[in-house]
Amino acid sequence: MKKKVVIGLSGGVDSSVAALILKEQGYDVTGLFMKNWHDTTGLIQSDCHWEDDLMFAEMVANKLKIPFHMVDLSTPYRQRVVDYMFAEYEKGRTPNPDVLCNREIKFDSFAEEARKIGADYVATGHYCRKDTISVDNTLIYRLLTGKDKNKDQSYFLCQLSQEQLATALFPIGSLLKPVVRKIADESGLVTAQRKDSQGICFVGKVHLPTFLQQKLAPKKGDIIEITDRQAYPSIKDGYPAGKIPSEWLISMTEPFKYEPVTGRKVGTHNGAHFYTIGQRKGMNIGGYTEPLFVIATDVEKNIVYVGEGHSHPGLNRKGLMIREDEVHWIRQDLKLKTDESRDFLVRIRYRQELQKAKLISKKEGIYIIFDRLQRGIAPGQFAAWYEGDEVIGSGVIDK
Image (cartoon, rainbow, N blue to C red; front, top):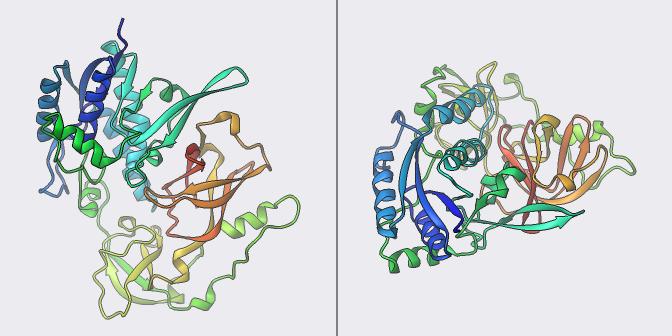
């Protein structure tokens, strides 16, 4: 008897080709479209809305002669992704809704709906791979990077569990994007040349301040420029001998604290919670040789601190910290014990090159100390750590 796979058909080329491959591999394939968002507030109008995606997904299903269904997951999506996003921005943090969407919706709420219609597996069009190994007679599922390094989406899946990976399939993870489009074109799929979706998962490309103003009220505040580059502590390479003390780790990961008196007012903004570390656009301040970048925000005092130029020391940090309750290990068998440390490759944003770093486990959480200074470390984002091409774990950056 054929194994039944329910694939999330999004109306894009990637999920379309994934469905085609699964059918050619002999699976009993059903397409399921997720309707997750209705509101168009802040949406850039050139983007397609969900009705267009639904139409394309249904046309693909008809072409492949597979059953097709739609499920409305807008309630759990709002509760578990969008409300979380609003709450994080309100605290002055920068969440990653795409990572949350995969953990909470695609491989949870959606997977539950798929099982209701008899799914043995849940498939998506992500550019990543999965394999299995045995550790102490226990089957372990490994999440691996996609073969297309320009499209690798393993970072977005860094919060998945062993249970979620057990029934997940990624049919296009070993393909390059141009090959995926060629397969779609040669197979007569209407999505062959359709543009990739952009912006927030299932919402689309939005003007973020307008979108956030649904819940977060605008509030005038000062933009303060920090020009004193001598005020920053010097950071030395290397580690203390013996057991690494928490005091040293805190000094390497604590964000630099600013006060209005240390800089000068150069403009105003409509709410510090609308800005993120490393942001360049949206300040509308001219007269500088180099661009201004956000180097810190203070949501309590409603102040945005900026620095001029790509080399401003306020943009760079040596390390970050993840609280113990926010640390997630895909590979539980590789979990660090308290006071244990290990070298990994780490990324703190999608498409960032993997960076060499040391993870140090303490009772309060995980400290990540990079070999090289890192630009734009933003609380609320996810740090994911790898061994080679395997995602080992991840966590929400606390500071």
